[in-house]
Image 1 (cartoon, rainbow, N blue to C red):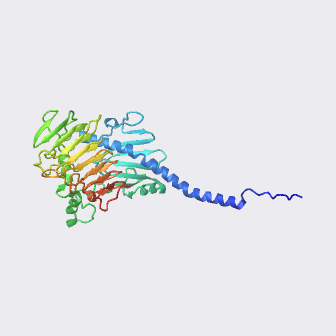
Image 2 (tube, rainbow, N blue to C red):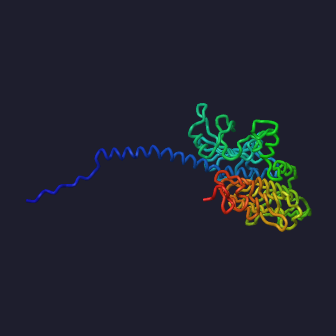
Image 3 (cartoon, helix red, strand yellow):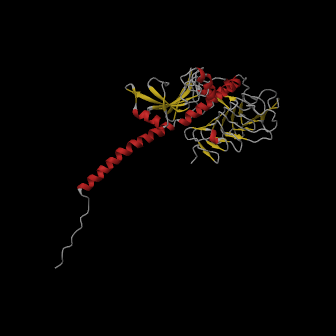
Length: 402
């Protein structure tokens, strides 16, 4: 007789199914909140490029008009969906609004997002040049998830915000209403007068042989000279040579045009941007006449869209701002002088670069932010914020680029 073959049982026991369900539940309870946080963070950081472009356009407008504007139509910025007008507009789900008064800033927000992004302009009456994350309040207290987002971005809580229904956290900057120097006439936040007062403020706003507030005040007093065309504007050895005729080269807009000077504030306070394939740059010292080792020739300027500042003189490009992956600063060795501290007090954002080369202190005193990079000498004397990083042999303890 044939033996009956035993059939193998296939399936899961109830206990096995329960274990799998429990594991899935545990993983979901951990992963889902993290996923939501990642989505929220992605939405928030996604507002930054639009806000940054508007801020940069406001800085260009300021260099031309010596004031900021609340009218988007006056700015050289394009937004998907058409040309913006008024003080606010919405593009691809992000609403941006301009405020000009005691403080000057652009605010970005999205429906369903409990945080707003605030970028203060360089010459704002309060929090100049700072970036804040604001978290909504709920029942009189800050909403925990909104607070957590700001903290995860590196924020530090502040006492005031642009809206009483929000709590502000500084992402970039000193967190002082009056800038890095603290309250006007004060001690920069030391809480003591006398010995630490005026002297303490100068230590925060002054570098070696340079006082940035005084320089910027001198530049602000210069007359605006409009938009340049042609090849370049040159102010060498006190002699002006311009395609537009005689006149100063300072406080002008250079769309695809160059400026070169070795005299005090020769091209300072200007806006440079590459346009239609034509390079835009500012040469401080110009490698022609080195009779002025410290000239601030390109100081206080704005460089975007691939514009470059070259410095053959000390502090030649000081207190300037750079934005964009092909915009940046380069220090050069000259026959007599070189570009030591050439970009002292400069801010590099949005992937721009500071190239100190082999010039001692070439990038010293620079602020490297938002994916921007520092190369060469002086990078170990720069300040790094956010994702700013250093490459090469002169980084010291600075954060290195991946």
